[in-house]
Image (cartoon, rainbow, N blue to C red; front, side, top):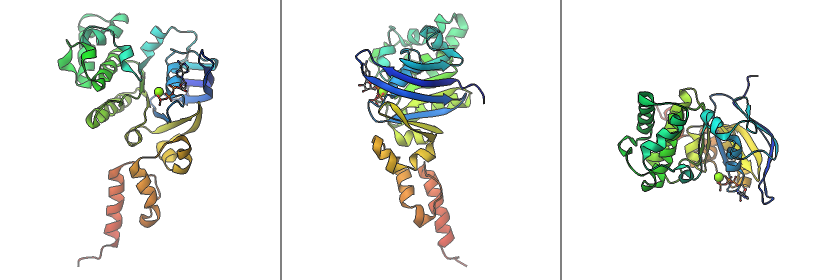
Length: 282
Ligand SMILES: Nc1ncnc2c1ncn2[C@@H]1O[C@H](COP(=O)(O)OP(=O)(O)OP(=O)(O)O)[C@@H](O)[C@H]1O
Ligand SMILES: [Mg+2]
């Protein structure tokens, strides 16, 4: 078996006040996977991500990122390998202009001159903020502020990208824009981990879902397999996307033997069944 890029082994984490937020978590994420993490509020998703990026260190167990135990490597060094967008991106904004903000990471990596400009321009174009270079980051909307942090991550070109609820505060277009960026990065060879409460959105992008419940892993499986178990998911206050539930309701009537994850797939199946049953006009 190849070495995973993210290895979480017997991870438990207890906050300073004594609250245990993670209990014996085991996860292996291989290079170039696109993984969604879901679960009710307070289940421990953000705490896990903070352990992965080294902001928090395990109380027990270990987290190994591309061969580096997070206890042995400074967060600043780890951030070159793992880019992250926190649930509250404002905590990551500090510069006076968007350009300065996005240039900060690569500058610290020693990148200068033309290459720096190219990285900043390309990252800002990817998120659609190329005309806002001189703007004050906190003057933009919440959705746009998340995009600035995403651009800052892109400019550093890390191999793993971790996004904690990146679509929170985004409109429909913004949600799909961000997920499409994640998909393109994945196609370019990156490993992507996204935490979200947006079930229909993640269904269209991730291949694997890890479901958290009360600080533990409740399910870890392909998206279709997770969403085909609504009766168990209800225990963690998760409902599969509407279209998946509709597919399950029509399972016997339309003879569906797969988990439906998109409107277009259900549309294709309905059309094929209608064609099968409609009388030949000749
Ligand atoms: N700094 C902290 N000190 C003490 N407890 C904390 C701290 N941060 C989080 N917790 C608690 O740890 C648990 C897990 O929190 P976490 O933020 O990881 O959940 P989450 O799954 O990301 O939730 P959400 O979906 O609301 O973002 C919660 O009960 C939370 O109240
Ligand atoms: Mg969270």
